[in-house]
Image (tube, rainbow, N blue to C red; front, side, top):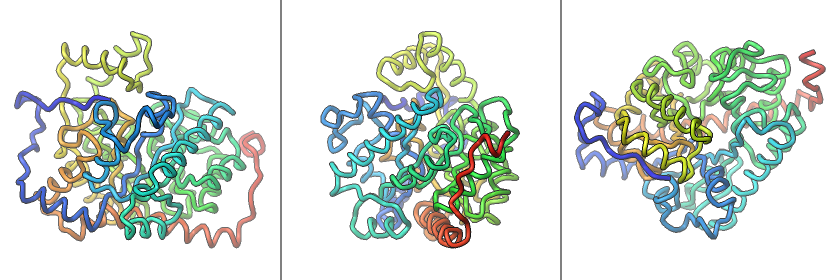
Length: 415
């Protein structure tokens, strides 16, 4: 997909934006060579489905795909990415067995990518696998399911996804499911239902990370009350900095040290820049008026976005915008409990300087100018994410000894 234009007028720039010294950028690149980025969320699999129906000969990420995608192998290397959670997302308009089948297709394309680009991408199921990949100079590749609708209210399907390599599941996407409330839907069950809490407990037993991006604040709190293992937010930022329901309230961020979890800041402008919230709502309405889904990033949809943007100048987020979120998240949750989840290839627009997966050094350079130490940045980029998976694995080993495999149904628990 196309990348956003840089701001042309000072009034469209963030107040905190300033040029990053070249020596800071060089320092950031060097730091990332030792402590690469673990990114919590990339939607390349869905982009490949939408653009070429998974035809990897037509969209080969070993070649330059900057005209179509945020992601290819060369830009992952340039960005200092050492591990990637590839989203096996399917939209919540797909329900029942259709959602399960589409999720299986998403898992399959990630496996195809790993086989085709084995010299660059390393399959990873565990924290040890992530460390091994880093030593080998390959990009550790993990899978994350985005939306509990993918399991069709079935604990057995949840277990099957884990067997196929899924290592986190986002409890909802943009719509509620039968057992969990979404941040962008009307309240349904009031957070998690009894079956929803059983889903969380079974994810703990399996060693699958509970991902609280996209869920309502009530669901976040219920999950934290239920989970015996650390949770993650794979791509969410601070609600105090940008008041959007997709972001994390401070009271929830403040619980992460007690839980051991990690909140991974996203780059999506409409979630991080207050001025972009209203603009994006109008741009999304424009897409719908022309018969497109508001999440569509195909060339046809982007052409409409660009025409709208020409008439309605778009507020521009920057690397400094993301850094403002990370500063606040660090203050509330602590350095041990934050990370990065860009959401590349899942958004029509990206911040200036973070246009694609090659941009991470610009964010690290910005944080260096703000006085972040190398030790703290190493936690942000690499060690926090590895630790949270390792801790979830430890909880899983304990629970597998004490907790029988559950076969409860949603009807039996939520009747």
